[in-house]
Length: 210
Image (cartoon, rainbow, N blue to C red):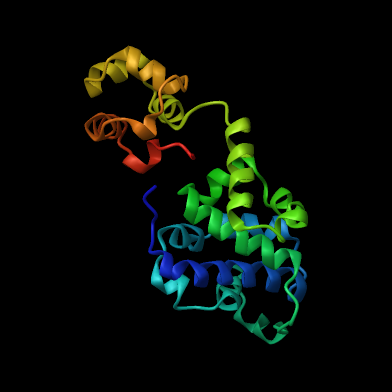
């Protein structure tokens, strides 16, 4: 798996999303699910996914929250707490999973809402983060009906045969990837590049969460 940014910045990213959730809920009295939707609609979510330094290390979680809310005057409401809240853990774990899986926050939310991630606090906050990731992948794969390839093909308005013609990839191969008879993550680079070019998307967009 190719990650969007170096692991050296991961801890800071986790702490920032964790602080955002904590500050929004406990100091600004925002509903977590409503705040998360504001986060998803903001440019900060995509900057986070790309690991842009201005978001990951250039600002604090509190500053990012205020940018999302759109009112810097609320900074006075910030009150540091000694104990880590479930919401803090939720942001911390979600940031790790996004980095680990390469999925966008929006893609994750389509199948696993933030309220459900929060409900996983017990028992997963006491476990290694890898166990949380395994559970998230299980939930994602069980709920996702279509593969990324099929979704991208449908969004492009192409039939399997049309995609085969454009990409110069056999239709049977496309069918096998769409039906998970073959793992596209293990496909030859040339194959994935051709499909990505035909669908006008990135190679990463075709990859499935392991």
